[in-house]
Length: 222
Image (cartoon, rainbow, N blue to C red; front, side, top):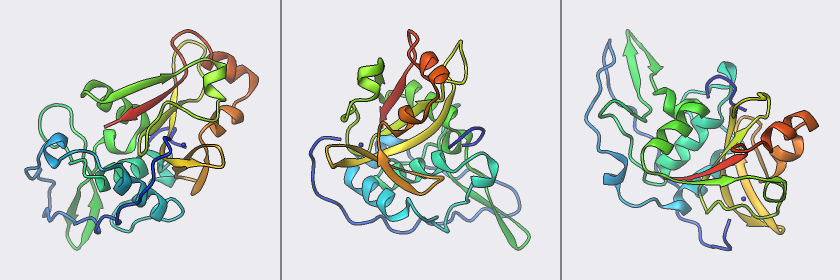
């Protein structure tokens, strides 16, 4: 789950896992190095993102920090998967999405943007930057075996904790269809689950809030 920091068409085929993330050398103070906007990296390669998610859902890539002790690692995980799917980091303009490190003395420290590691900021970034954004609303849709998400798309879940507005608390990535339903991979519990698991885990009061007009879950494609 991702409180403070941060399943698909019958497609087949799995690409090779992306090479290990290259640590950027930034000495003493963080200095932004040039990078191309996401679209410049080429089209999204969903199978590569899914391959990455399957390789790392139950473990942690040592090239990235683990945010389980800072609210949850779920958004960090899906950001890594999208990057593995050839979505380039965005380091220009006022709205950015990237993971970097900096060095202070002999130690290296993570310096990602909030949009990389916090679910609400990830959702806002992609919503505001031309992603394909699908609404999953109403009880029938929220408990159906199949969601509107495509392979490699990210689910953004409303906790239902707030009675007045969406409270985004968790992100997971669609990894395909199996056993008659969509599946997603996620951190921080390192599980592959049916996509409607989150809805099933909500209390009656939370479900009531999620079913209010304008509420529900979301599916985002880069």
